[in-house]
Image (cartoon, each protein chain N blue to C red):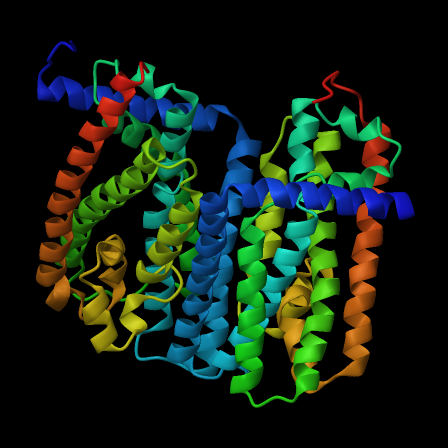
Length: 261
Length: 267
């Protein structure tokens, strides 16, 4: 575990220096992502401005949940972008390089790629959460709980990306299903939670945990619902555990393509 | 030097490219088409379902069926050309554009026909079916006239969208990575084109102001379901085709400069 962490840290520092050396490109990615996320938030602010409060959800709640989604997305894929990309490496036959190192495979895979655009997500997300807390007049504990729940939300995102990318172990020639599955998860995550009817809330909390990465953490933070904090954290660990199991099962099926990258 | 050919012959070639692209899409099998459809349609259908929930809580002056069909039409208009910019960028990065500009027809015409063939045949019927199942048919005043105006507007919208996406794709000639720009413009298109909130639901002051933006003009046909469509149609057509002309001129200039870069660098 200590070796994994040291390797993780070293790899991150190298990737960071590499990205930051192309300053203009780095800034363009970060700023572009901030503007992109701003557009998504604006979409839902427009929706709320048309319909008014929807099941108790107003513009401030949209800001808060979008902030949590953006910040957890930034954490998840800023530090574990490999969870999305390893499917492509399996298809290209360059996955073998992960198996040849004296480190645990899954953490190494997660840490293999780095996306500078995710720093835009993190900055934007943090800003939105702060704005939402200030506008709603919420106490500091709301902010603290929101930040605390970003971590299990990020864990769920990494887990789902890992599970969908693992499809490549069984069908290396089919990229579409992985892309489709992530889209089915990510899009509802960005919708205002109050607009989901009860049945859809259950579906998108339990089976496709899209609401667990934005809407539910924000509702929990506002309500200071301690049992829900535990539930969200447990869900994060459960999905991560499932991802590890699926990865292990897929790895047993893996046949080398002969490429070591 | 490319041999010149009559305009009718060129059009039939683009029609053939469209047909080949559509045949290639269907030929890849039901699994590919199904996953492609789920990716695009499920997102739109989820949005439409949200409107059912939102209308129960806060009904609007615009009927639910009109709002849902507006979302379906706006999404279809946007989804058709969604991958066009990426296709051009890939051609530029890989260098295959140097070969494709030697074809006996316009590279841009080829890329438009190819993408239309891969997108149009699949999204439209499924989005229409989803909209009907969720909200039934909308009531449209003077449906024949509205239908004719709608068809003209769709032609303008497709032309404008294709040219705007092509402009974004051509950025690859000058930018190492145009992805941030593409992302931003696409998001603006989603918001202003009415794919998330039908323009007919916005306050009239905001609606009138944003209708002058070219990205909004790509979503004009989606307003066919709003009660005041025929009243607004002449103004919308002028704005839409005005932008078609302006963007066509800009695209022509940008494409000329881009082609010079191909020849200067040896392809």
